Image 1 (tube, rainbow, N blue to C red):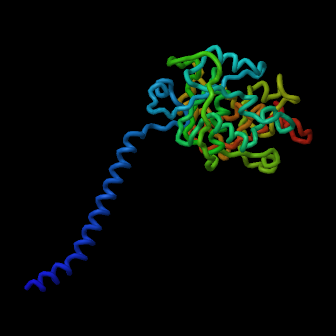
Image 2 (cartoon, helix red, strand yellow):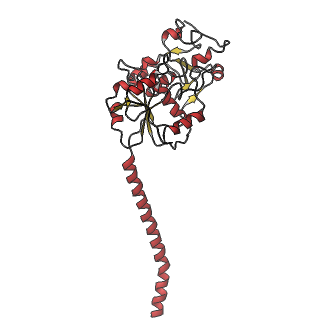
Image 3 (cartoon, rainbow, N blue to C red):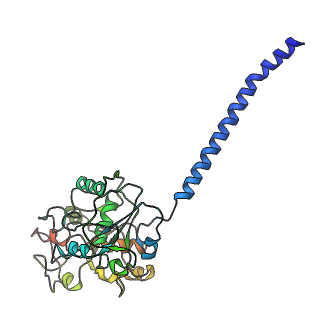
Length: 314
């Protein structure tokens, strides 16, 4: 009898061990799942990739919000930073159009893109991590901030939005003084969210829709205050970036922007004088529901450097 009991117990032991092992695994999975759900619940919040309203930014949860002041003036390179020093959104850092958002001017245009590896280094030096929500702003309806919006997306950062209404609309905490220093961030480049086209590629592709963000008088050739020659790239239509805004320098509604760009056939190439305000039209087209438009970064200032390029006037 004792031998039977011992044999019977021993025969059950492997089954009991396997059962306990399975139950242990299940409990472990449930515990980890609960932890992940709790962490997600605690950290999840809305992400912004186009526009953000002042009240949304003011109430943004957590500490992974990075804000950048992009004010600039084409006629006075120092004015943007001077205005920043006089007053800016609290904890915002300054991004210079000339020093940070451009490479060296030349035949490739007045505001060429910097080398991508240089921009990635700059992004890290700004203290940015891949998890950060970025907000950019200026005081000219986003005309310069849109360039920064595009460039962060150029290196694969999706969570970047433009402050709707800009500096004038901000009623939250403000500071004066120099741009604060940041610790080095851990940002790693991801697949680009943007599209680029070179001058030669543009000349070779006649099926693209071209959108010029400059004023009507510059597009028509009536007046050209900046670049060497007046006019526009043949077949380009004129949609000045200022037309994306209402009287308060806020972006127009989705419906208004759709009506504004009605009739445009994709794929769309956006350009301007030097590749800066073209990004404003790219952002506005995204708001209107279009897919990502293509940036001709050299824009008109590169086009007119090559005298065999055709020029249209009205």
